Length: 501
Image (cartoon, rainbow, N blue to C red):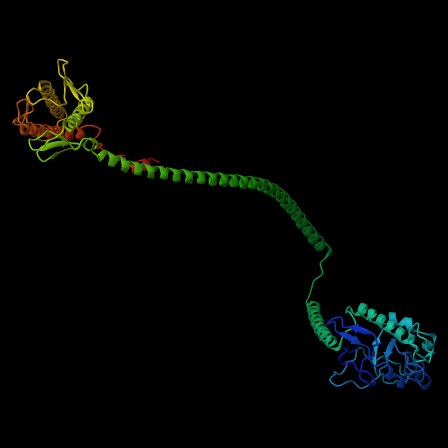
């Protein structure tokens, strides 16, 4: 069998399309049966003249009785084409008996094993002539156009491949290259088997050369009994091991159940842990945000506590010789005319400030002289419940009620200053840090100037009012330092709250 690339025809070199196509069972290359017609010259004249089918009658195969049957394929061209390697023989030459003449068989042939060769035996072959016409081949038909014999030979060839595959355990047909590879592989296996045989034979010879002693019946029984006892012990050990195995298997099942339970518990624990961790993180973030707001609020609170509210609400200053409160001038000069509305507004602011401070310390402070802040129309009530107007306009020569109102206002300021000094003594404030007026108040005089307007000069009256506002400012500072308007004794520590949490 040759590959299609190496198969050539008898005359034109082209492959006959009517020839059957086979494939190599290893490399799957296509194979073509070639050399069918060239074997006719090997046949007798009466058979070669009219039959191109691979049937053999009275040929060299008829003259030789073979142990195996052969399906002989004739070929159109004996010589192989260029580049085609020599074809190795597939089977050994058949053995012939000594009394039979032999001739060399040329061409491709397939050796069939004895079980398969029986299908080709004929009465003529049993008498000495081998007629190998496959079943269904009409050997007597001389017509070249009759292909029934050729197709019958193809069927026989397929059957031969099947039988060869079943006998050799190798799929047939094979190409030359695959056949060589298979042959090398089988040679290697044969070498391995021969090496194993030699090793076994060496071992066998060594065993045969070793001396051995035959046990007596008594020793054999003792040995047998000893082996039986060991067998019983081993069986008992096996039973014990099986018992232990069953116990261990039961414990393993229990442990697996407990392991599953622990895994479920662990999974639930981690779920709860993650949930708690998330809540804790959320609470910590919320706490940090609250602490941040507290710190900001604390800063604002400290700023507000350090802010002098009363000082901002009642800003006492001066405009040259004239004292001012919230930019309202209190007093007038001969060369500076101040309207009574502005003076009345200034007296209203001063009355509101003194009334606020006195009212804060009530009932500690004996608020005997009542100040009634009523905007630009303040009034003063003395200890006899007589009320006087602390606003103008008034006549310079007749202003008794206005003068009494200013005098009682000055007296109330002096009483509140004495109360502040006594409170400092109770709080163990050193005398040098206690309240002290810059201008002494004595009756209706502040410093050396009277506050009474009747029969008084505007310059002296204005100076007395300025000194009175200065003393009022000192009382205001003392009040800020000793009331809730003052900064607290200690701030709230945010870090301590954080450490507690």
